[in-house]
Amino acid sequence: MGLAVKKITVLGAGQMGAGATAVFGQDMPVYLLNRAPLSKAQRGVEAAVNAARTNSLRKTVTPGTYEDDLQRAVQDSDLIIETIGEDIELKRHYFKLIDQYRKPGTIVATGSSGLSVASLAKGMSDDFRRHFLCIHLYNPPTRLVAVELVPGPETKPEVMEYVAGLMEKTFRRVVLYAKDTPAYAGNRIGFKVLNEVAQMVPTHGVAMLDYLLGTYTGRLLSPLATVDLVGWDVHKAIVDNVRQNTKDEAHQAFVMPQYMEDGIKAGRLGDKTPDKGGFYKRVSKEKTLVLDIRAGGYVEAKAPKVPIIESVKQLIRYGSSQEALHALFSSNEPEAAIVRKGMLGYLSYAGMRNGEVSTMQGINRVMGWGFNWFPPDAMTDLMGVEETKRLLTKEGLPIPPHLTAYKGGKLYQEVDDEARYLFGR
Image (cartoon, rainbow, N blue to C red; front, side):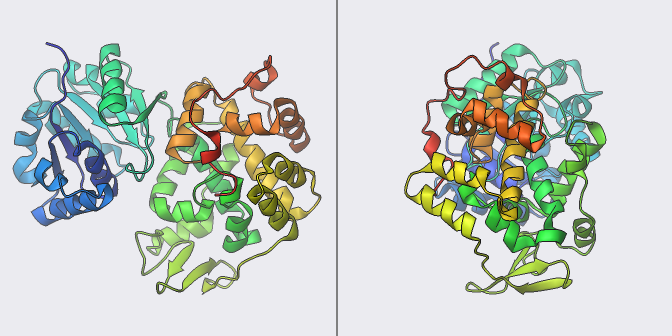
């Protein structure tokens, strides 16, 4: 009997579970389960409705609890995906129950942002392991359409092929294949950049860093605001996982800042703890405070203005992106040096992961469609390969092998409009 997904169960009615339901529930029936009481799953349904902006989800999504509905939902579904916390033992607890209840051939997936797929499936039945993979959606899934598919060591190729087709054709996702390495592809690269910025906060301050490395540098949201959106606890789980299980040329970039460790212990997690804040703390619709490490609390944010940055932004607004980059990378101002470090570090680290975490096409896809950052090869095309190599050498950064082997032509081969990613948004 061939693979055919007609009904889905989502475990976890939090932010990611509701987001996944908002995507899947528009095209097929979904069970959305959470721990009791039932009201938690019902709130997840409402969050999914709001995210998808359609009331039709109330007809296609059935809320339930693990305690009362897990067995029935699993037996009635063809795909089960968990989106619960990044705790390997907690996930395995539910996978053992799913393994008991599922029909042979049912596809089971983790929505983990970077835990070992092989470890999650270890000890489960043969049929479970052959139909198990990671389906990693990006948050929020209704706006970020990338999905990383990560196989386990025993996942059947036809399962991967089927799920890729399902994600692309039914759920309108941009698919990439990643390897079962810590944080997979997107988070390995993205959180290296984010944590490096967080490491610089005690020296340069929150407001200045988000200004210097803001949207004009090729991202939908400034770095520290991104960490607040993701959550400090999730940020810690990802960078700790990479640091503990890898050792590459940027190993020190994954050292969690002590002030963030202390903040997490105090309950400061970012947007999910509005009363305690994160890098930012909104006190009213009109007023947002910014974390000041030296002051030991929150202060009113003063909008920085640096002449070289303002000049670069103006050139971008006029459509002169190449001229803007030249001005930025040739400037001797210390603020420009911080921006160069961030932008060139991203290009180097992403390119050096080619073949380790995914193909270069996969890396470009996940950074563009998953993070909404300018894909590294698209940025290199804009700067010019030889100029990029010169700048990387000057900065003391590794030159990715695919740039060393460059023979001409465009590196970035996707058909979407490169301009949508950044400069001047």
